[in-house]
Amino acid sequence: MLQAGEWAYSETLKEHFMNPKNILQGENTDDFDGVGMEGNLQCGDQMMVVIKVDKEKDIITDCQWKTYGCASAIASTSVLSEMVKGRTLDAAFHISPKEVALELGGLPDHKIHCSVLGDKALRAAINNYYTRTGQEEKVKQEQAKVICQCMNITDHDIEDAVLEGARTYFELQERTKCGTVCGQCKDETEVLLAKFKHLHFGI
Amino acid sequence: MKVYFDHNATTPLHPEVKREMIAGMEMFGNPSSMHAYGREARANVEHARCQVANFIGAKESEIIFVGSGSEANNTVLSLFVCSSSQCIPGSRRSTIITTKIEHPCVLETAECLAHRGVKVKYLDVDRYGKIDLDQLATLLNDKVGIVSVMMANNEIGTLQDIEAITKMVHESGAYMHTDAVQAVGKVPVDVRELGVDFLTISAHKIYGPKGVGALFVKQGTPYCPLIRGGHQERGRRAGTENTLGILGMARAVEMRMFEMPEEEERLLALKQVLRKGIEEKIDDISINGHPTDSLASTLNVSFAGVEGEAILLYLDLEGIAVSTGSACASGSLDPSHVLLATGVDAERAHGSIRFSMGRETTMQEVEYLLEVLPRVIKQIRNMSTAYIKGGLHAASR
Image (cartoon, rainbow over all chains, first blue to last red; front, side, top):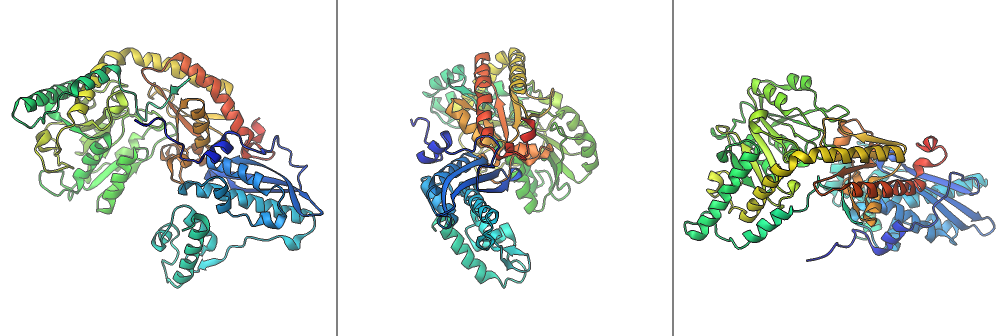
């Protein structure tokens, strides 16, 4: 008979969950150069990322965080805070959820959506730094683009649906109702579906 | 220390059950066979049926052994899509009434039946998880075929007044089913007193083996099997009987008869200590479920600003087993449907933990839990965004 099995999570993730790195202690964020927050408590995940920046080299020297969420949410913010230290703002801005998941030794599919908030919060913190330091021209907005005009479904909605488990065009329609009226957006939607599946799940 | 606070999920085998089952492993005959091997198995199955029937005040002929509580619940609701004259005629009384806090095996079956033309209505519950009899009265009419209301809720422990509900249901000419999986063996259950037509029991919630349960069907009630193709259980549930499981279930029920009376008071005392301890040591919590009409074994608590799966796993690292109504632990994106139905907001539902105790739970275990839990909650809150300056719960600290 088998004994108590492995966690649903990798050893790396378990380690970051048991001993999270770089938790922001207390409430004060005044010492930091950029603050970003994403998600909300009602949805079950919220993350805040704060950064210190070497202003001459545009390099992140410190990154701390707070997370409300499950084990993979906690561990993914912890590992992200380790990953960004020493990176340039530009390099840090382009960290993808897939890189975070890889660094954690993989995540169960239904947990991927818990790890995407961390890098979003990081990008918000970087943008916040640019705004504070009068470099508004560098702020990169994550603007949503409407794909399905009939149902007003954006590329962000499609990405969220993929993260929540949609793998086929039909499943995507079930979740978002995109393309259920005139159907003209089908080709563009399928391209995005393939893109997000590859981006987040490597499939 | 390893402690188990998840008895509503399942229970360890009672030592007497284990002994009975080990001895029973020698018995391999098919109860349907006419030779000595078969007769031995048949005798044991029928003896077991008698014990289970006695335990809930039923006749032996009214007990059908099934594979699980879920199977029993599926069977009862599915009577409705059969149009044979032997079954409840779906065409005449094609509405089912159930509640928003049933086990998924009822809710998902109801949903499936709705796709097949059955009308399903869902009763609301109040903040304690009780249904409103006035609402039931407004929904009952001559189109309603069956009403299914769980006796004790698995997540919050709230008990419904099945006797009163059944009276109303029968007055309207409908049949009454109760999923009593969490109630049988914890509170007294007598099918004649309750008056119900169908009642579901599961063995593994009361220190019996997994994979066996029973469905009570009152004599004279229309019935249609879910699993066909055999004469077993008087043609009401095909498939060779799970003799060993049935043996274990009967022994489990017998042990409940001895142990149940003194147990409730003891568990109630433990629950009070646990509840008071949590209230005193941890701020910003709320207790879910009914304060008095509730299982003595079950306490459901929401911790603001922390997510349930994180609590569950940190407690697991300390050897404590609990369960949560958070979305993350269930694999879905929505937190507990039961808590949401009682009006608990999504955040509190994500941060809910169910502690369910049992016959072997001790005061030392409760004390150990009370020692570990405040530390774990503090640790998680320290990294939670809910407690940063301007955060939702910052002011309460």
